[in-house]
Length: 153
Ligand SMILES: Cc1cc2nc3c(=O)[nH]c(=O)nc-3n(C[C@H](O)[C@H](O)[C@H](O)COP(=O)(O)O)c2cc1C
Image (cartoon, rainbow, N blue to C red; front, top):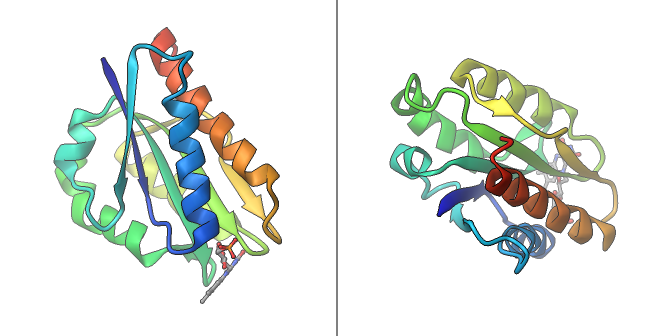
């Protein structure tokens, strides 16, 4: 059984729904060989990453950057993960009121430093909340789990 780990900060009801949707897609009945779990960013540590086969990183954009909680995850775990998690497949989910580019840029820079592999165009759910964000989040979870099961990431 492969493990897909979702590490996210979900401080609002809308973002919680989006993370639930990611999990729903990733744990879909059509996927047999993947177990998807969610660990809040403030609780996730390097051991969790080492046990995972792929990651989805989720955050709101606040003040032009990722949430402090996701930044804290990297502050605590960047060096413990370094050189042990090279080529970790990962995807990015950003909920942004109106932008998202600062968060995307910062995450891409950190992930490049870790030598993790971004396997999907970052999903930026921008603007007023729309129900389609839930569908997009579910599709992202399904895509990552299916890709992991098929061995293509
Ligand atoms: C203090 C604060 C700063 C924010 N800064 C940004 C920002 O720089 N860029 C942006 O796109 N959205 C920004 N937002 C909007 C958040 O991204 C948005 O409130 C969050 O994703 C939750 O969305 P929701 O209302 O759908 O739950 C900010 C929100 C807060 C509370």
